Length: 431
Image (cartoon, rainbow, N blue to C red):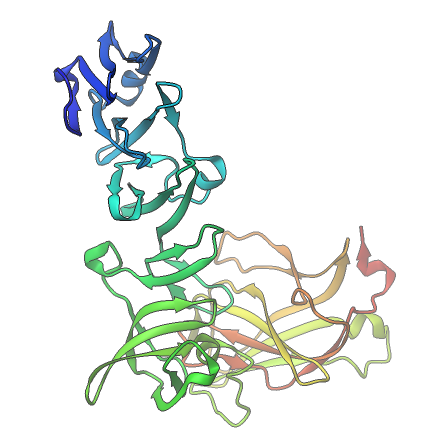
């Protein structure tokens, strides 16, 4: 048969006659147990071998004839089922210069950034001159839009991204969203996918601070007079850079869309208020040894941290984190997550030591030993004590305990002073 229009064909319709250009013909046929392409000049290419079919065990291939690189010539794709819902695709482009079909593969550097490497259940996006590749993994659908240039180079112009934690904001995570890029991989837009589009069922967000300013655009100069208060609910819509989130909430005149600063909402240094009293009956203590006369180089770098429960009920820490606020002589602050805390309970009127270890130098890194409780399978480790790119100097350091079960972060009652780089005794400097 001669294919006079593009379409999808099964192995029952073999041989498939291909006419990619005027006066040019080729065909797909089955020879023995293999599916082969007979090129316009007679060369034979095995498209799918019987061994491949046996390995997959998902039935016969499906052949699709479309113009995948948008050059005006019909190309071919061979689809093979992989699992219950995924179809892997191999593409062969017709090259008018060589009068032959040539393999069309996703480059390695592009494949590394895909949700699923290669071509999966491909769909042509004619207006964008692109291919949409869709796969399912870990109970989620994922897609990548691969832009095809006239020189047949490929780059990702858009893709879905699964939920992820933003580690520099405690307990804040981005939901499933789509991200668009320029050709150099720079993010242009990052928007939350609706449930109908394959996103999460719930994209709501609760304001975590006492008062949160609203902006008309992701810009500090675009502040409005409006604000939200702690406990207000909103929907997450989009993100800009690492510090801005677009939200929608119900106002007096209906649904309102605004931008909020994640730094305003989550930055521990910005959120510190010495006058604010936490509703959680916990007191965090950090001991400052700067006045110690005995072995001063050791004790001024000893980090002792304890937690008191001054209430009448058990308090359980589920996903605790210890952060450090470094404030320099100029008043600028940097926040550094020190480590996670094992799940534990603090009894009423109980004091619990969280840390009593000294800063050490291992190679070129300043670290502190972090032991864990018996409640987890985590292994003890050495973790960096100072934030990256810290300038030399003397810093006031305040410890902070965070946990999703707490109403607010628990800030240490006092600051301690630590020099960077620290002056350490010889036995704390190791290769």
